[in-house]
Image 1 (tube, helix red, strand yellow):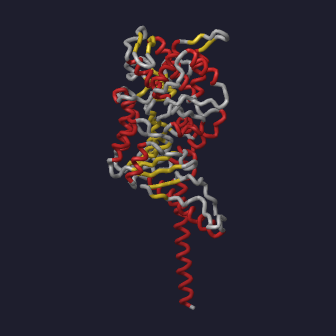
Image 2: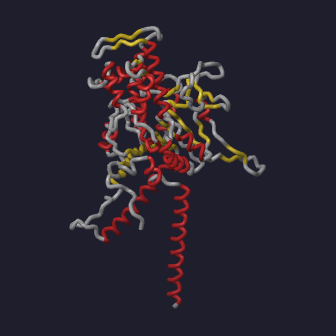
Length: 469
């Protein structure tokens, strides 16, 4: 009998009910007994099978969606942006500070640290020239800690400052502690350098984490085992990386991502309404639905998106191409907004509208992986979906501790499923051990039913033989 794959901290609960047995079965004397081990292993196998069957049932519902956050990219080398990534800070300092003895500091780098100070409201954050230089010298030291402020919120602060200026020639002054006095040109440069540096860190998988992409390939493959008569699976991601795109390319999957074109891919949201079919081998006129298709929605943009001037043949001025860190057009990666009005511009308004539409459909399921519920726009849409009686949410998180999840747990709602722990709470463990391959499950089910039928026939035949005797 196979050993459990879970760690002691792993849990899988539905409406507050724990479905997994404790990993350690220990006797009162402190030593694990053989009988207890066998009972536990049997109980674990039954619980594991039950969880996979339940999740497989969800996969067969009419509308299935996935929401991926930054935690889903960690195994591929992705950075968590709940703090300022050290790689980003090092890159910005290397570009903003020059000289060997008398250091020269660019104005835009001071703006960057000023935004960090204002966003965090932490007086210990570096903001003066001397403090910034001291921080720069510490960045290569072993064990240096990242600055504890959400990096997307720092970008959001910079965007708000820029929105207050009519053009780059103006200057922004705000009294306070610290006082704000920045030139529009420095602000524009700071945003450009910061955005490009963040985009560069999203070129995943990193050389030392190449194996992580295998999880995404497995995820894509398992999603395609849904019956073809159901709606296409929707993958909504808040990440800027291209891991889903790479996994889809490797498995021959067609992604409907809102862009059309061959040499020049432009944003056309109506393309989400399209589907792919191919003719049958006979001449009867029947067509078959192409099975390798998924819908991809990048709610916060992508490192492959670039802003262009809108035109008749490019109405939204958004194009998708291979990421170029030195490209002349601004990269469209979108910081978490503080005001609802900031998300109303295309393409984000259209993508969020489709996210909301998918969740409120009858018999809709949302798998949330690696998202810490820190985006109020996303949270409000999920709250709206929870008003639909047939909606189910599955939260996959190593340590779900957000106020949003805590509030859901208090409700003890059977529509709220939570997988947590160092194995089940991560995308690799969930995809490998919990998310079933429906084709394998169907084969296994057929084999079990066949064996059961054969056993019944044997028992019946044995009974008839005894009667004849």
